[in-house]
Image (cartoon, rainbow, N blue to C red; front, side):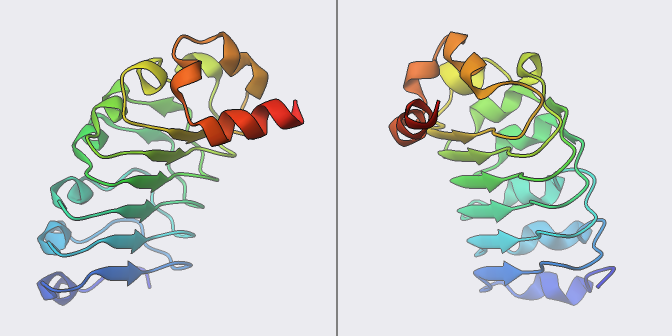
Length: 166
């Protein structure tokens, strides 16, 4: 699929939508009308940014945007209501500090991107609800995270695994 039909946006009771492995570059403007959507998987498409339409989906729990062509995470991400956001295997080199304002975000996956440690907002560690942060495979050594303020707050499981293997 290269585009989604607008009619899809009329499915008011749709809770799960998997559109992996297509050629989607954007979502329909009315996508935000899928008010019951809880799980959205758009892995392996051609998205270049986090779709702004996701911000209006108040019941969204899991968003998988892995394996796309996303280069930055814009300010609109701060309005995202998801509990888990998977941005693995993109080309992300910049993340808005607004990601720290996501009220329900507990799991943030940023593995295998183009992030330098200086581009990872400090507030993710110190001022967010994020408890699991996965950042392996970026342009910095994982053990450098220990030097950042708020490191101890990030997921015990992640820290335990990190301590075990380092």
